[in-house]
Image (cartoon, rainbow, N blue to C red):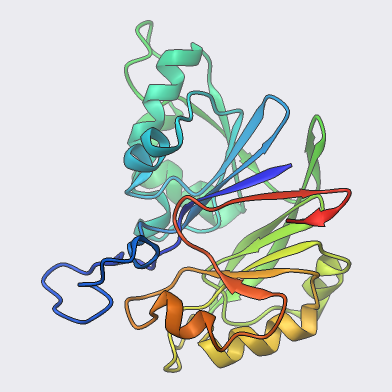
Length: 258
């Protein structure tokens, strides 16, 4: 199984519009972050997590031309506002693409993007999705997907476990009942917004603490603001923990995450 980091930034991305800070002005491509999203791939299966506003650019960069399913963590704009660009995959595939999320998110998507869930038109010129409430495990060939309920401040949202890898973005706390779903991970991908405390996201120190508690064999931090310089924070991270960057590919399988 391969995980592709499509985007690793926070809601404003990095660089931030009009910001003169050193990270926004950095020439290091690892400091240039589109909105957070991943693609999970095994065999011919491509599973997308979060169709954010940079979806088109991300898919073109990675050469993705097929999607089997879309998973949504929550309804915030930086995670769903690229949903219209899914129509390109409907056009290529000539089929409705299943979309999975919790009940609140499915209801919100239907309210905000009702045209995406209407019957497809003959020309496949608009997004065509089928809505599925994710309450239990599901499988796509070799990929088993488990919903992991977490808290984004006071908002219940979903993380997802894909075989031995878990993706937890926009998280502040993880209920003990969900910690049991995160045992024996080869790879943990975890929210790490900024150094300063935030009411709905993990700070750097909080992310490090939670990563130690989950104790995956490898942890990669994502969803970072322009407060975080890649080289500076990377130099201080413990062994087995690192920062993501846009375009990072990670293999997860029998030999662990590499």
